[in-house]
Image (cartoon, rainbow, N blue to C red):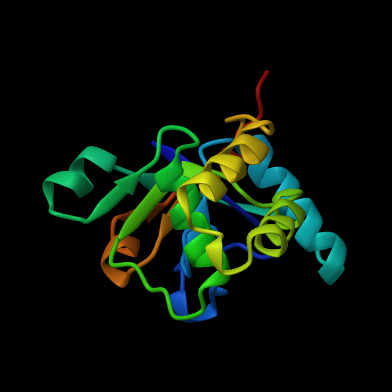
Length: 174
């Protein structure tokens, strides 16, 4: 499958040391199967940096990664388990999961405000069942329009193949 990464630079070899912590699925290299989502992210980053938007394209064989034994966590929809995982990654600075790849709905963009409001409302009880139900209700209203793939380990990164642009032929078409 093709996965896209939006930025203001082309990424040839993802470097996990450059990835920021406390994201939806933790520190990792994030991609999406939706080109439009990658384009929007690239435009946002380029606006801040003053560079041009760039989209890096990768191939990923999910079944091959599973067969090779990668530890993959997949959330197909907004669930209490998804909510708990996202909140732990976003809020708990000591939380570190052991997954190579995490796949699931996006909780960024306007979600930052929902997450902050959730933590303010529930305080230290933000991971209790009723609090998680409330979080899912508030996040699922944004829909499943965007899915993200987070590559969290060097081993996972090795399963990504950069798609190189094919050079255009210099032949004239008559």
